[in-house]
Amino acid sequence: MQATNSSNGKLVAARVVRAETAKTRVIGLMGRGSMEPGEALWIVPCSNIHTFFMRFPIDVLFLDEKNSVVRVIDRLKPWRVSPWVWKAHSVLELEGGALNGAVKPGDRLEFR
Image (cartoon, rainbow, N blue to C red):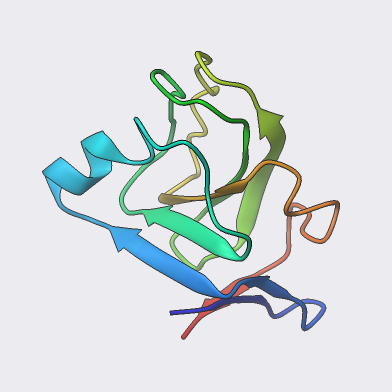
């Protein structure tokens, strides 16, 4: 699946993996050494995350139920906890620096 910013037409992630079971949501990106360019993990449902046991920073998009971006965190470092984002229904995690300002709150993502 791919994620595209419908607000500006830019590709956000070429390969999105959806984590929606309890097991896949808990494991997330823990223990991995890195992410491939263009790769993302979409955690559904989710309104806050942690980066415990991770080895690299990530860019984080908090999305509401209509996949509109409600918060962006750039380069969240390992061993951190994100704020609780009350309006968030899901989270898209990407390699740190991947977004580079291409997505902002209010943008809407499409997943295909």
